[in-house]
Length: 126
Image (cartoon, rainbow, N blue to C red; front, top):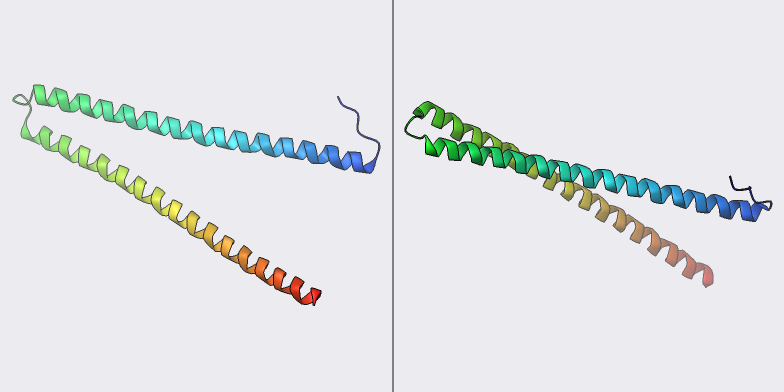
């Protein structure tokens, strides 16, 4: 274990370095978790699409043996899955839009504050 620096200035520098290291590790873990989750979602979607394609191919091969009722169920299921995917994509896009809008509003507020600050500095300089 490293020894704690003796001067307050050195202690502050050491604390700042350790805090930065912790922040970097937390950001990396969060990024990795999100990346891993996105990969899992992608893999699950691809697997579901492969299974659906296999089912469609088997249905096509034995089309004459299948009743029209099963064909209708297959089409209904495919439409249902497509609807769920579209809803998910729509929600994701809406979330991204809201996030971008919030960031833009924060940037605008920061800019207004910076302008007020600069104006105050100019007045003070006069």
